[in-house]
Image (tube, rainbow, N blue to C red; front, side, top):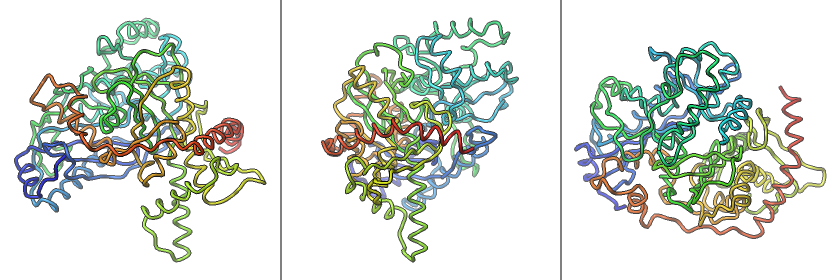
Length: 535
């Protein structure tokens, strides 16, 4: 990626040749604008948080739109301040969002129940029954699990469903009128037939037959979004959609959109991890590892999602609901303490100082134990969670060990899934490419992740742009001149020379993590007691 002069970037933006990507993450909606070399040139953002409403983790639709509009407005402000030109048109747009969950609408487009996000571990019965029915792992987060659980619960709205989608699919539908999604996103809604690059029809028929006695007028194929592959055009921004994105009315309609994708797919793209034997870890509010498989797994594993890359390759996905949220809370607490003591520390400085301490702690965290279970954790069998810290009377209770224990525990549920892929299924990866907030402090995230996975971990220079950049790249790929160019070949050009040096696993760290991991699993009874005892 070459560095352009601001005047050159300004001309490119004014000429409508920049590409826009927006991703709705768990805690932030981010917009990224890229130039014709696919380099980020401007960004904007909006912070948001899910709401626990009557026991359901959700985001109201009003907050979806106010957040998107705020993120776009922040991007436009960045463009105006840095390049002194208005942002009125772009070459292409892509939208991404957190995968899975449950959004259902009636024939008039009315939302039937509040958005049930991936974070809700409330579909255990559906997950187990569908996994048996399909002989295919159906995690609790998947849209089909939420649908079937609603059926099992005899929820009144199910008979009125006309369309089921994800948050990215919903936004794309409202902006273009098209009910579709990219194959990677679709693979978290319902199982994909890799040979057909579409939903597995035989499993869809099996599902319809299984619920036939319920008397619904719809068939599954009638309510699912269409599956579209990477590189295909997926509609255009309508006049109404342009106003939804930009209420000022300055953004032009008619802009082509790429298929909406999930954060797993954009993470693979943003780390150039779409070929076999590559893998990436996205670590932030949740953490998941995506390993592109050379062949199908020997059997179904309830802990492992089988999803796809945006261009339809099979991926084994180990997903943990909880990662950084609990240690974020602890670091905020230390920040409050510093303020009370009269110290002025910026948030990045606070994180850097405290997280770097973790590298000086005892390899096994000195006998300390913590669980960052803000919500349930399917990988270890919890439908609810309680953040918890414990130690024995002879533990080495130091600040360095305390911070290290919270970094280690953030990856233990993930490691539980990776053991299945790497040890039991003998999946091979050459290295793991990391992105997300876990890796913001130099060296720390890479070294801890290398200890947890036993694999070299590299960070791309551009990984900080995250999924918003990933979906912008997919939008750019849609506009490519050479229609025969594959997504891996396209990405090879984008990422040439931008790969950082991999951090090799340190034997001492690996041994320490293994000791902590054993303690973590032995201590799950403590976490279970906390769930039972603390309402």
